[in-house]
View 1: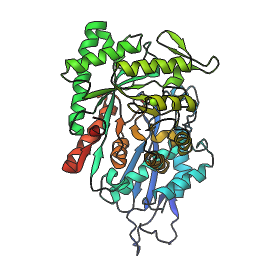
View 2 (view 1 turned 45 degrees about the horizontal axis):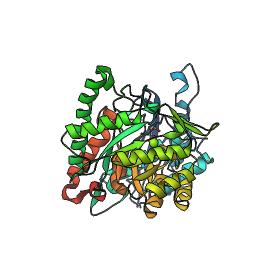
View 3 (view 1 turned 180 degrees about the horizontal axis):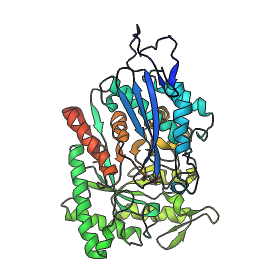
Length: 451
Ligand code: 2PG
Ligand code: MG
C-alpha cells in the first residue's frame, strides 16, 4: 500500500489538491480530486455519480442504483424531497455532501485503503443508517475508490477486489416476467426468474436464458395479445396475468419450445412478499386470496412440488425470521431460500439469520448497506456460513457494471441483473462476457454446483 507524502497539501478548491511534487513513496493511487454529479437512472429518476482522479492519472467512477421494493431496514437513500423538482426525487443534497464534506477529507489519501476510507465516511456520517450524508452519497464514493484503485494498478476491478488463480462465474438469474411493484399487472410475485444451470460456461448459460426469453415472447403474444410483451422495470415481460401458476406455466412452455428441459433451466421466484403483506391483519394478498403465513408456506410448498424451482426469495415479510427458518428447514435441501429485504446486506441482520438458520442463501445489494467494505463483509459472513450468494442489481439501474466484477471476485453462485433486455441490464451480462473472455480457461461456471 503506498504511503502518502507528509507534505502540506492545501486544497486549491474544495475538492482538489496539488500533489505535483515528487514523493519518495508511490503516490500513484493518491486522490487528487473528487467530483460528484446528479445523473439519471433507468426509470428516469436522479441518482448520484462520483468520479475520482488519482495522482498517477487513473480515474474511477461509481454510479448508484435505486430500488422500488426497498426494505425498511435499508440504509437511507437521501433525496431532496422538493416536490417541484424531479417530483422530490432529486439528489443534489447527496451530491453536495460528496463535493463539500466527503471529498475534501479524501484528498491526499490512497485509494488502496478501501476499508479505511469507508470507515472514514461512516464516521463522518455518524448514523447507523447513513441518514446524515446519505448511503447514495457514500456508496458512489466507495465504488469510485475501488474502481480508481484497480485502474491505478492496471488490473480489472474483480482482480483488484479479490485476487485468485481461477474464478468461478455466476449463474445469471434472469427475470423474464415482472410483477409486483415492477409492473402494472396483477401478479403479486415480483419476479419470475430463469436459471440456466445446465451449461458448461457462463456464456452458454446466458445463451440458453436468452433463447427461453425469446420463446416466451411468442407464447405470451399468442395467448395474451401483443401488449402482453411490453416490458417492466427490469426488462421482463409484464403480461396481464392474475396468477403465479399462469406465469410459471408460460415459462415452462418457453423452456420446452426453446429446446431445453427442466434439468438444464431451473426457475426462481422473488416474492418480495413485504409488498403484499398487511402488518395489521398479518395476511398476505396473493393470487386473489388472503393467506396467513402458514397458508402461504403450504402454497409455496405446492409450487415447489409442481415446478422446478431452485430459488425462492423473500417468501415472507422482512422481519419474519422464524417463518423463513421453518421454510428453510422444510425445503432447504432442494431449494435456496434467499433473504433480500430480510437481511438488506447488513452484516448484523445476516448474523441473526445465520443464528436462527433463517435462510440458506443471501441476496447482496451494494446500496442496501452503502459501502464496498461492508458489502464484502456481508458476503464473507454468508459464505463462511455456507450460504449461497446472489449478487444483485436494483430495479432502478445505471450503466455501471460494478456488480459483474463483484460477483466474479467473490465467486457468487448467482448474479441477478434482470432480463436480457434494456441496456442497463445487458450492461451487466455483457461485462461478464468480457470477463469470461479475458479469463478463458481460468473461468469455471457455477451451474455445475446445482446440476
Ligand atoms: C429485488 C430488487 C431487484 P428492487 O427485490 O430483489 O430485483 O428489486 O431493486 O426494486 O428492490
Ligand atoms: Mg428481492
